[in-house]
Image (cartoon, rainbow, N blue to C red; front, top):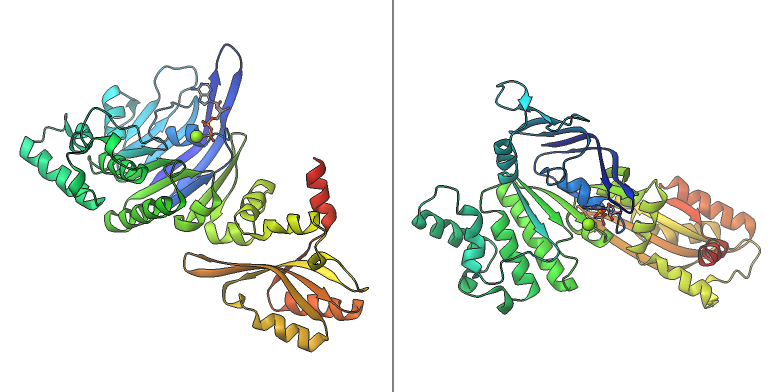
Length: 373
Ligand SMILES: Nc1ncnc2c1ncn2[C@@H]1O[C@H](COP(=O)(O)OP(=O)(O)O)[C@@H](O)[C@H]1O
Ligand SMILES: [Mg+2]
């Protein structure tokens, strides 16, 4: 549906030259909810704005199903364009750009509504130049407001709405021209957690009902966890990791993805236990080991721990536990203290590993090192 190949975007200002996106390659399939996560300044917004060419990259290729392929021509003013209709290569025109943007809706953190217009007029705004009659526009707006659950608010002004309702108006407006793609740039970052949940639920519903492909930028792993199928992790303008959401949560490979996954899992609280010298993390016997266990899929249960303890003669104390449901599949992680002689705990670790559990030792040195940085 969307392919970015070797996309680079540099901003040159008086103060500095910023390589906002460096050589990014990304492939997003039709009907996917694709997450892009990274800290502030990582280049997420710039990358996503390259999809509708709100930012024109200086190099790289952009392909959109049903539209065509745009190839940047470094040094030349206009990119090359090969339309999907097979009419042959030419320079990209202003009209092509308009058509591209019409097929891609966008929503933002601060909603960007017209404050002096009613909800109805906000949603009708993109239809002004569509050639539709007044009656057609009226019925289209009614349909959209119904879709986002705001039928009763048609005559209200944005100032009379809650944040969640404002974002619903923005979503209805973004869908006015029946785009196949929706770009969401931190759309839930200004909302309370329960409102965030309802907006994410709405996006998921639209994805399913309309077959809408959604590219969703966020700095919160919880949002990715909630609705995305695929995720790209960005750092310093680069895409450092991509994959199925379940796989990235199960086994992140980059440091930054690991830190995002940990921050959303609840196991981060181990830092506090170390800092407070909690007895839960104190080793008292020769063989004691403190480990993080990651159970993927059906092995995510405590029965295995009980069985391991019984079989090896260890005692296993659960310090922290967290079970997630990602795309309906359970993913569990736990920090446990395995207590006993060296032989006993080694046997326990082996048994857990043999059962398909990932076992990583947790040392409070790691935590101290982080604190010193
Ligand atoms: N229009 C611009 N002019 C100059 N620098 C920009 C512009 N837009 C973004 N940047 C810079 O590019 C980098 C990436 O920004 P952005 O894509 O907004 O990151 P993110 O969305 O991940 O926070 C930042 O250093 C930012 O300051
Ligand atoms: Mg941004």
